Image (cartoon, rainbow, N blue to C red; front, side, top):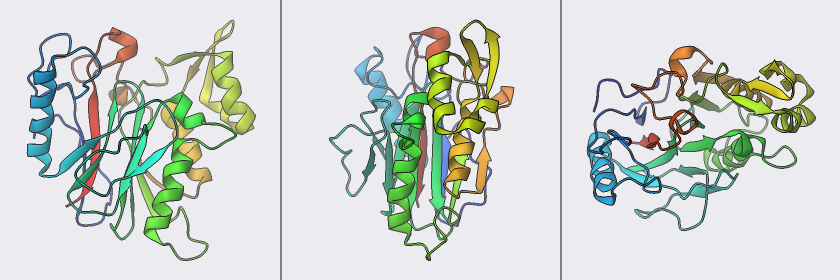
Length: 259
């Protein structure tokens, strides 16, 4: 396991393992150097397969990659094969299966319950986070995860904890009025997550928006990305892939599994 891969600093239960890869450790040539895990970005298939094998060897679990579409669907992982349907989140209570999402500016969110009996990973770009009518990818995956967790009545959300990985930071994520309007319509207080750039442009705080969503769902234990510069994929080209910065870019992976 490469020394600059991210290991969440959070009080996850014993047996729950998690990490987020960086650019380091793989076999891909530029511009995908080196640990590209995305098979859809133009990299050589052999290099991607080798990188995925390296990841599986490092975590000693089977990472199951989703067909991500910036949507809100969550898939339950029950066997050794990835789900055939499009999804932007996965969850499982089966040991040895790693819920895995690929990112290169969007926000990875890893989740577990207090007992460590179930885990989940979500790919939260602004579209998936906003969703439709207030139900986005976090609402979808938390509803499914709570069913697996079987919390006591009145304890939904509070039984869960979340870790936010690297993403495009609040000083780099430029959006238009349309994006701001989606979030502010759903949550008027979300206006604090947008800083004006002039005209119809804003800087958006993606991890801040995710934290608001999680707290609204009752999740109070939230760790990881606080919007600081060290977490910004755009601002750290030596460490992170960034589609917005480079256009042609590899993908990192955030994984969580029950060991």
